[in-house]
Image (cartoon, rainbow, N blue to C red; front, side, top):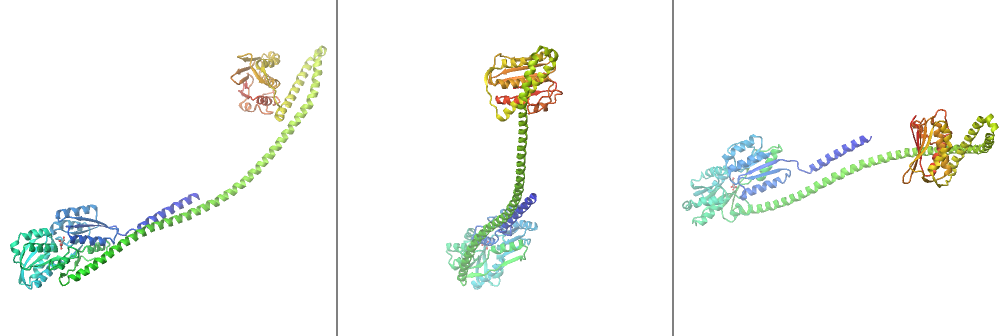
Length: 619
Ligand code: FRU
């Protein structure tokens, strides 16, 4: 059951982790595309406007990655930058090629790799691209030509300031312009220079053709910055005749073509949309596999004194709308962030709630289990208590039975003692009588011995009882233990000699004074030595060794009697225990009584023995 629950929790946790992660992910955008944008030159206003438009549109796709590189008007550098983008791994390339020919190879390569390519503004020399975004430069050139025809009323000399040679808008605008002025037979292009799209370059080139400037009536510059450069040079050269100037781009805002027209710096400009927004929109259509057009031609219009104010108004309106959009976008971003964090908090709350329910359930389950266990433990406790009470009752009964047994023995012993004493003294009298001694000496000795033995047993029983129940007090006095032991051994010497058993007390000192109860220790040693004698065979020995250390006296009784088994040694000091010593069985009280007496003297007694190797008793 426990394993199942653990598994369940594990599964739940994994599920919620997935839920949590996916919840967090959901807050992210759907697209994770990387778009590379290779810009031929990034410094001028027109290109900056293009980039801003792109960024604005990209902000609607927050998950997309945008890599931007500016080739600074260097075609070789642009090829390298595209290669680097390909190495990094892009999903789509947007490129405005600096020059058509040098960039064709890398664009084809990219396209052939299966990476979609959007060519913007300028073109390559090949059709290997996915989509084109930009105005039709030929049409712009043509429109400029036609406009120039009406502006000059069909008559005049024109100077053409062209873009970078080899760049497609320069080529196309030139061609378009030629075609546009064709129908005006009075209009002639008297001079052409390449300004490379740059103001300073244009100025430099124009300054080199000063004499030609003297008889021109109009300038067609391929863009507004070169148109402004033309006006500057004409002013600087103090050209007398009025010269009409037409540019291309018509950018709104400060420094843009619309402002130039409005301030009459130039006479007209043709709108050349950057296409930044359209390029990004087309890119996402391609990436999301949505339908898209390969050629996305942006419209153009001539801006001159007739419509420039309207354009300015429109532009400022668009501009303020743009700012509104930007503000709303930043608000949207803030909201998105708030939503994301709220989503995370919500997920955490849900997970916590579910976990709380699960753990609550588990806690409830274990509470129930605990209650069950407690109940069964209580039942067991009651059972144990009953058993304990029964045991106590039984032991009380057993104690009472032992008590009764002891009382019986003690009472009997008391009853026996008087008649035994009464038997003993006539027997001793009879033993002293010589006549009777001759006739029944042996029998009298036997009688005396056994009566004496009986009397000793009876006394032991009474003594034991006194120690056990009456907690007999000992009365100690200082005595020489060596002399005391020799004295006791003296009583056994006669019997020992008869059986050729040596009985000795050995000690380093002759006089060792110890405090003890003479009567009690007398009984102990008398009992122990008579025990030893009983189990020691003829020609054996019993040695009492007394050793003294700082505060302990050790008395060891060693014999070479028949010995005991280890389990017998273990119980030798227990009441009524009788070792299996063949025929010689004792009462089983002597050693137990001896132990009690030694304990009363704050001593200890132990025995060691090996079968057939005698006994050692230490006190
Ligand atoms: C900007 C620009 C524009 C022009 C276009 C042609 O770099 O020179 O003024 O219309 O590039 O590609």
